[in-house]
Image (cartoon, rainbow, N blue to C red; front, side, top):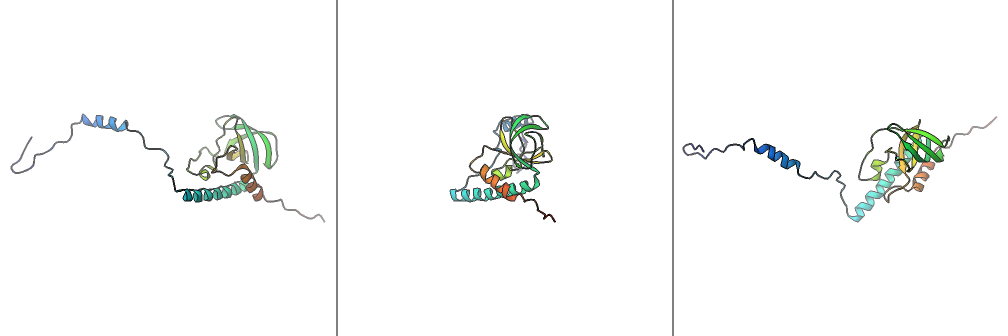
Length: 173
């Protein structure tokens, strides 16, 4: 160790052999949680869920006006670029019982509240969905199995039916 007259000893940096060990040690640490949805006091949570239900109703009304067809359907088969569905009920529009549909987008959102995932379009074979369609593309795939923080199927259908504009009538002369 070098010492200069009246000065503190000089410290050397860690040898290069320690850096790979430190890197390996850091890589072994568990990753941080992927989702950071916090918990809230009960009253705040109820207000948050109530606000999100209103957001879901607004999204349903908006998508209902954009969609040219809304159906309740069972997914028969899924391919990378499309899916075959069997329509059980036409809510808006009309057509065949067998449809070939494609996702309108390729990304599904993940969020702490159901409204964040409202526009998701991922389909699974054997599942039952409320599908909003525009030109054969799926704008929303709402699974019929719903959680307690989501609009019920009845609530969503009421919002959809309420947002559908009745066709204008003209008088015959």
